Length: 273
Image: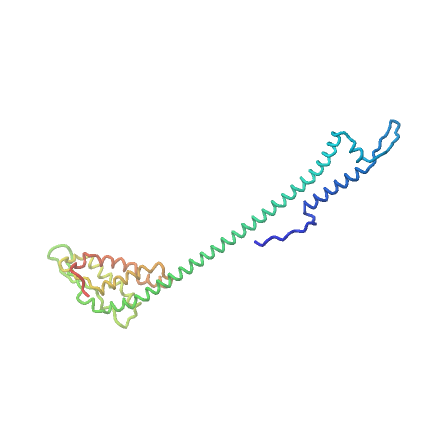
């Protein structure tokens, strides 16, 4: 807040100036009255004047002197009482104005801080969207490479169609034949849900032979982790990328992978490169 300039003494709304002028008026009136003659009128109406009231005042009895001084002091006290009340009113008005300005400044500051917080939140959101998009874009080539890799060859589960002995035995495999090198990673992701859902339905619907479980393969595990990592980015993606991932059904893929990765479908005898 800028420093307030000094107001001139001689101004109409200055109570001190009016107090000084009123005091000077009382004093001038007192001097004028003291120089007036003392006049007395007798029974017959004859008036005789002699000497000043100042001389009469000096020769007056102590109680008369006290009453006179009290009268003048009372008049001066009344003048300065009015001036003081007036001055206090002005100071209170100034304080109210300062408080109003402070309130406005505080409100402006709060609005500015709110805008800064909103801007910071938008910047953080933009950064997270860019980071999540970069994660998705960085993982897509790895997804394509794994889908075209020979790691799926020989990966199979022995199972029966139901729990009864003698029921038909089948081999459960991941059908990677739908993926070709000419396809883009995005096109492969569009096909992934269907092929993975087929594997998931067979593993959870058939009776898997726990004595003939396949060993975990590092390339396949990296593939599963990449898909789950992509699913974790969905919430922070920009709208267009979020819609794309939704069309790939990444959330459902993540749920199926969690089930497929459980130990009941894998041999505990170690890993295969």
